[in-house]
Amino acid sequence: MEYIKPKGMPDELAKKAHDDGYYIEAIQAIHGWLENQARSFLMLVGCVHFKSEQSETWDLSDTISLNDTLKVLRILNQISTEEFTNFKKFNSLRNKIVHQYYKEPYEKEYHGIPKREYDEVFEETIRQAYFFTEKCESIVG
Image (tube, rainbow, N blue to C red; front, side, top):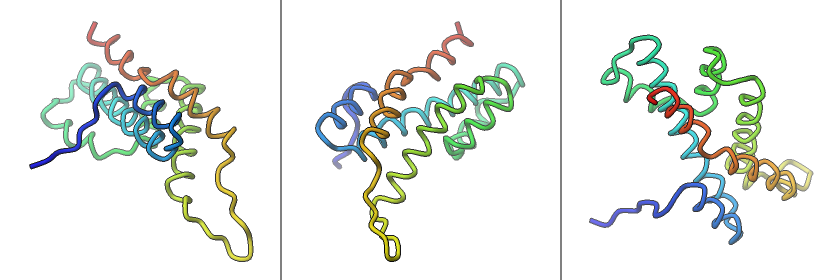
């Protein structure tokens, strides 16, 4: 059986896709990574600070969206308001691109997402690609 698996670091893969003009692939690659890492951080916070059992929370945490994970982490004061806002901005941009890619409004012309807006949010997110990984490492030492 043939499998598809990423080869390389997520920020590098996303940056290459972006540079090659594959904007949806770029944002999906970094979104998938951030979502996975944010969930891991949430699960780790639950296990370390709230004595949750990893075996009970592993699969459950895997079903929480990035948006909801960010909200919970903010509520638990594990990320700042500024960090929350920046990651929400990225998630909103990703949702705009993925869910409105083929948008055809009634009697209007949809031009898409301004590239400058995309690049600004994308580049900031690439700089923060290992934010949640570093948060996890700070808990486990």
